[in-house]
Amino acid sequence: MLHTYTAKYTKIESGYLGQLVEWPEVITEGKNIEDCREMLRDALNEMILAYEEQGKEIPIGDCFIEQIPVEVKYVGQTA
Image 1 (cartoon, helix red, strand yellow):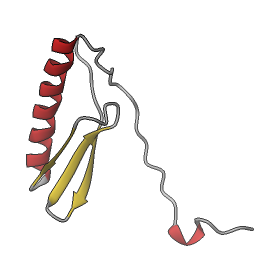
Image 2 (tube, rainbow, N blue to C red):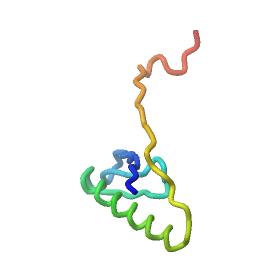
Image 3 (cartoon, helix red, strand yellow):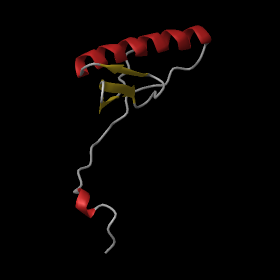
Image 4 (cartoon, helix red, strand yellow):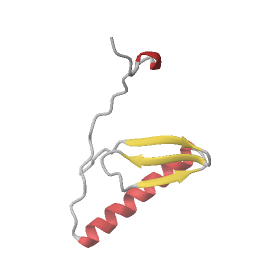
């Protein structure tokens, strides 16, 4: 069965940090976004194998992420 996981990438000093939203334990770093993406896929595959070996339930993906734009100058101000 095919599941889709949501990757979150954050720019860090050494490159990029990648983490799965639905499975936060799957986390890695890469020197660029492509490297990080590849390493995150590898980390996900390894985590699936480890969970299967241990008989643990694998978190299901397929969540929806939405970005909500807001002007920072208005955040935290009261009326």
